Image 1 (cartoon, helix red, strand yellow):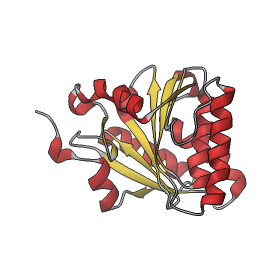
Image 2: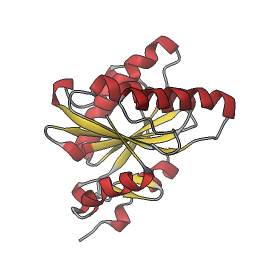
Image 3: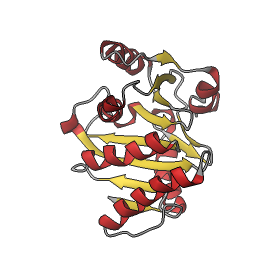
Image 4: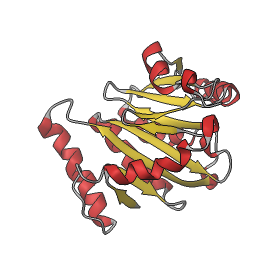
Length: 203
């Protein structure tokens, strides 16, 4: 795992922005697609707490097999919405994970976490933190093929959005999520406008 500052996260995303609508883009508000078929799928967390680890593994790998994982970036984008003491528990957990990786950065400084291809369990463990402590965060997986098909947005209002670049991928994973009884729903207008900026697509 490599812990990144906010500036390093911005630099990490810059090459994607030069590649047009087939890749993810980033600005101060977070990640988005400009592909004309981009669409969102909204998910709520499982009602039973013991299902959360399954959920945190299933959703970030949806549409792929674990063996094709080639890394990921998790970006903590907004926090401090709720009780500072309760969230502070999460800050300490992340700081201990940073220190265990030999990079003892504070939570506020180390907003990005880049994972290698052999660190899928580590990435899932880190992704659980914004789910549990209600931080707005982004998750961009890298795969050995089809890298830019989706990213995740974890919201402080207990919703995870799968942002799909193409209709084909959206329809395939929506069906799979239904089969897994995760109750997928079409993304609401606010999330679609934020993450699917089709009007800004490059020609």
